[in-house]
Each structure stands twice: as structure tokens, then as C-alpha cells.
Image 1: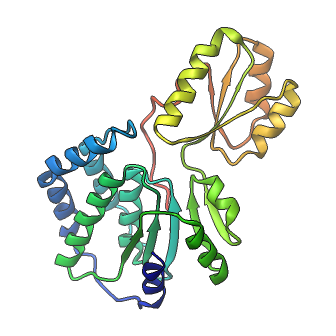
Image 2: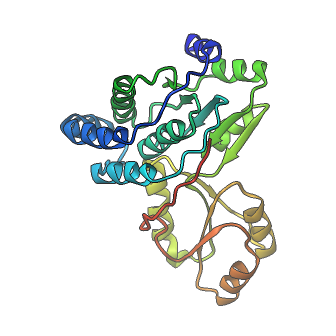
Length: 267
């Protein structure tokens, strides 16, 4: 594992040209390997419930096909939750920005992630693009220690616990939720949300304050990008809409039904 980090740091950037056909080749390879992806996903979902939509993978590739290239050659280590859609986004961002990346994630959706990485490696090889993508499939204390010794800025996406362990990092929220419930009659919805976030390994912080001023303060200070409020109190709803800043707010509704994420460049 540390060997991969050392190789990543020692390797040099190599110039390459992005050929238009590379995105069509990626889509073609995703399609031709669809049965393998499904089998890997079937194994993964015995541990986690994240079923991969192959069409969504192709749509992500299409989004980046027409995204302008913004060449920035400095390399980056990225630690994230292991969401396979995010894996593909990061691979495509690395390609578009000519930026070498070391992806580090845990065993969540490991089979699906490794297959996506393998497909991407093989396509890059065909287009003579090397030394662009590196990966580590376990975020260990040893890796964190080594990164802290190097004092290189690490990009952390979604994993706030790991982010707190790093001396130098840039954190991006990714499906990080914070929730407050003040009505017992909404307890079933609260339990369903808790169960969903646990199964999909989304971060969920629950607020236990009784005073609404303290609730609003804690939510505004949170790294979460979305706030779930469960209440029948109209005054609470009004205050939350007026005073919660820079969070997507869901009031007594399912926050996971939307699937319209825009491209966000992390690299």
C-alpha cells in the first residue's frame, strides 16, 4: 500500500492528448463488460445495498465528453467513500485535467470499483496514456500517518472522520446529511432514513438538542451539505428556511429520491 504511494509520488507527469474517441470507447467497454459489472455488484450488495445503474455510468461519461478540458498537471491524493459513480467521476476528471491521482477508498463496493478501475486502465492503455491513475483499496492508519509526514494537501470527499485525522486536507461534502426530529409521530421516517444511510454508507449526523437556536447553530456549523428536518411545527419550519445557510433542506420528505447531480470538479 505504501509502495503505491511511493510510486505515485516518484512517477513523473507524462504529456498526452485526449482523443475524442476515448469517451465512446469507455462507453463501449462499460456495455461490453455489463455482465461482469452486474456480477461484481451482486457480490457487493450482499454487504451493501447500492445497486449500480449501468445507464447512469454511461450518462456520466457523456457529461464529461463535452466538458472543456482544464489542464492542471499537479498530482493529488483523493480519499473518498468508495461510491462507484464518484469513482468514475474522479477518473474522468483526472483525464480531463491531465492530473495524476491516487484514489484511496475502503472496501465499500470494492468489486464494482475495482472493475470500473480496470476498464478505465485498459482504455487508457489503448490510447497510450500511462501514469495517470493509481489506487489503494484500504485507508489505514499507516497511510494517514505517511500522508501527514509528507504534509501534502489531500482531497477528502465525504469522509469527515478521515478528514479530522489529516494535518493538511481540503474537504468536500458528498452525501453528508444532518437530521433533526422533534415529533414522535415521524419516528418511522427517521428510522427509515437512518437505515438507508447506514446501508449506503452515507454520513448521517443526528442533532439531539432541544433548543431550536442550538439546533440551527449546530446545523450551520456541520460539514453536511444537506439538512433533514422532521417536524409538524410551522414555526420551526419557518426558522429553518430563514436561518439555515448553505445546506439543501428537506422537510418531512425523502432526501434520496432526487438524482440530478451536476458535475462538481474536485481536482
